Length: 196
Image (cartoon, rainbow, N blue to C red; front, side):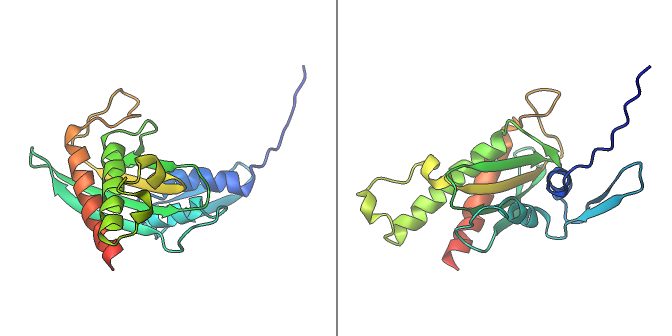
């Protein structure tokens, strides 16, 4: 009989990213990560998703220092109150990185909250750019959604009392009322931020 004993240590960044991804949504959450050898580490994020976005961009070159965050509630046609929170920051990379959650459950395939977020982001930035004569070099053409999201790191969370998903794995949110609520919240709050 052959017995192999192995003591594998995870590098701190890998462990940290896993725990940050899983636990940074509500600002009050924390988790102790430990092993059978008595080592442990506590992860606590009082800054919630805003701090999570800053962490995701830690190894990148942010285009602007401040992480933009928006939060508001909207009411669905059913009368349900839906809370929307988003944090975003652009960096010098070309990749778009959006993490989305419904009731703290990661939706890896996105859904109606991402569709609403992307639409609002493109519309709001085009409106702001046009109103402030920032898009004159484009000769009347608006920025495309891909252009707007280039280098974007964002986290979107939705609190919904009765969400609908595409499958039991909850990989994609399909609640139709969420798209319009997210669009409204992001357009309104991001527009206010840009005007400040």
